[in-house]
Image 1 (cartoon, helix red, strand yellow):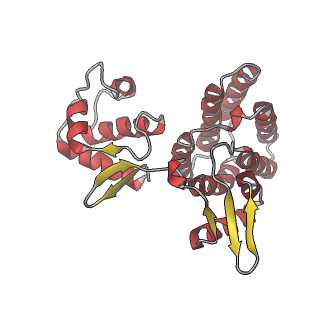
Image 2 (cartoon, rainbow, N blue to C red):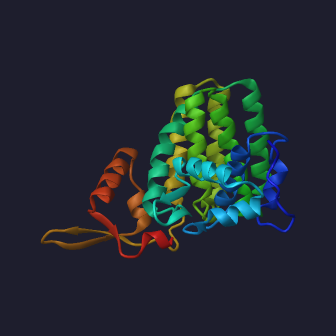
Image 3 (cartoon, rainbow, N blue to C red):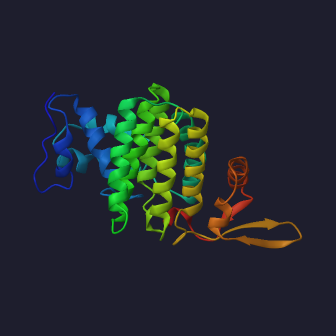
Length: 276
């Protein structure tokens, strides 16, 4: 089928450059809308009205509906029976859940290597080191995603690649990056370097340990600006208040417990988390 017909002035025009020459219209529309959500062109909680998307993308309603259903399965879009589709929100609980999952998956992926992938990691690491002194946090974040993409590809595991790709989509929606924190870029470069050294030495166990530690440090360092203060209400004991960073600064096993408390309502926010 032909590509979507998008005018040069459309907000979706920039996404057509990476589209394949051929493909199902629903696949192409899905790719366009996904990228628009991930880079913030389509903001969280914004409505995705079929009539507007049909007009802007130059396709019929069917591929738009199919694309929205796929993006809903990826948790990027929320569809309700009466109100329609909107871009899903990313809450503090979502961020914590992503980091908990990512620690395990990244560790598993880091156990594998090939010379080709090691060379690619070295190239990306060199670019990050050169860019670190005066680098833009967003540019460093993009290079960081490229670094971790090579690691997951080296695992040559279809399911692991699929799950970590979904994690990458979530990470791109965080809105903030740990590279905004003074000194975090240098720390991350050192952590990356040690992972590559372990891989080159063929020490899969050490590479896994370092990858988990790396993701844990990123979880702890995640910017807490504009994040709600989380508190727990204890019966007869008043309220105990926690800084959001303190809540995240826990070992992996405790993070699972934190998620349980959040889901059960013992941990709550004093502001609307959906406004993050």
